[in-house]
Image (cartoon, rainbow, N blue to C red):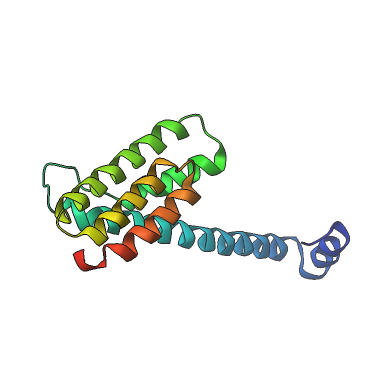
Length: 144
């Protein structure tokens, strides 16, 4: 990070307007990197749900914004994190139930599904949901 002495040196060398523009561009670049991470995590959520929601058209379509908003709520420690988390978790549980119904004859997949159920039920934050999504995406690759 830049300390106060270096900021003053930069400010005197570049001028005030250039310095503010530089800080603005650095902040913009940092926000883009953070949003790319959120987008990637949101896409994992959307892809997993789309794999199984296509079998039941009565369920509303998933969107990555649900997971992105959940990550932002957790980061900002907002009060409605619990309700959003339970909504996302219930949507993932519905998709997992559809997965279980499709693989009822395959005993190997049933073991994996029970492990995924345990991962999902033990999830307490978005990091644990990300672990669940990565494992679920790897194990449901044939439903692409």
